[in-house]
Image 1 (tube, rainbow, N blue to C red):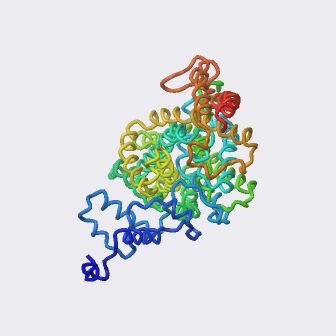
Image 2: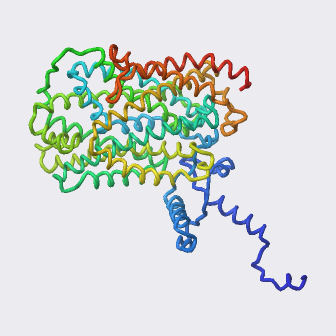
Image 3: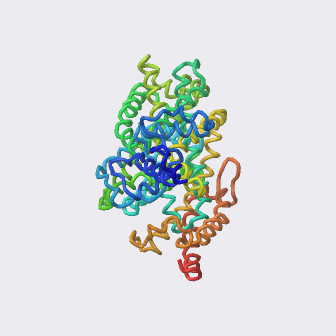
Length: 536
């Protein structure tokens, strides 16, 4: 045996030593988070299922099966493209080094300077509201509900935790998965809506030679490229994406603005039911942003001014939303009185109307319709980025899957669902909105009471090290029970296409308001009892 060992080739190492060497090589391949150096915390948090050297030929995995070959290709793309591979693990303090706070403003501004708010605004006339009344509803509900995402954004730099990870400190390690699933459905639904709008714009500019289906696929694939790369690429893109979007929208208003005066006169004066129901539409656009707002501020330095973050988020979210929703209400009110717009609307809905507005500009107008379709990429990419993080929270086993893999999964989901939803778009849009405003309000009622009352608005009272420890986190029974019981009053207050509750028949839709207030009130005593019984 001794002679055999002496004759062994010098390159052969014991199995244990080979394994240690492979682990060291994998750690050296970690793609650094933007603007930071690697640390032991980063290495332990970054899931690496397959190691691929930058100079390595991925074809070596040809015999490993299609799944491993695909993951190897993704890993190599991440290395070459400096993709952010950090998932849901909290960002250590020493890695929260971003100081360019203005990026937060440009991010939210770009996310909302597109055709999505225009589409939501066009629903105002559907509820029988004129331009003046639609504008007042948009102003009031936007200014009110924007407070929620703006406030929760300030917790990102202080805690270094994504929004749904913070929710574990009230909903618990496992029960938070219910909220994550709802959040995934909401964010994916928004992606579907934007995919359809973008596809309609591309189809409209091609005069029917390009189907909406092909347009949807193009938008989804472009979104995949941006969201795949992560935080750094996302902020870089959002810094400039709003400029061509704003130019295209201004030209559309300039070429078609004279026709906006031809507003349809509502048959009846506005009712409380119409005002509150449209208010629910506006709130359902704004409130879900609070369920992901701190996802975009976790890399900021902890000493960043909270007032500055709040102001940047509030203005970046509210200003473009108000202006473009009002424009949408004006377009929706004028469309029935303009034959060209009505015909375009029948063919390609929102995209058709925008193409008709820009038709006086000729070929340049068609080019701007393409630009308008691509304005949605900023919103789509940011939303998709948060979705990839939420996937990792859904189940413990998914935490081991790199974030960028879920960007591919999301594209595979959004494309077929968008194609199906495009068939009856506005009906599907209203049905989708009905599902998002209520649960989001209930969720925020719990999270804000937990932070403001039970933790005294002090981020130091969160044990960040316990973020993934079910025994150190609250069980979440009080939170989920309070949110669920609130629907005993929310359901009778719903006013939707498929259901109108007895309270809503008289007052209009009060669902999201009651979901927030009732959940917060119920959570107070339930959480006191939970802490007394469980001790955490």
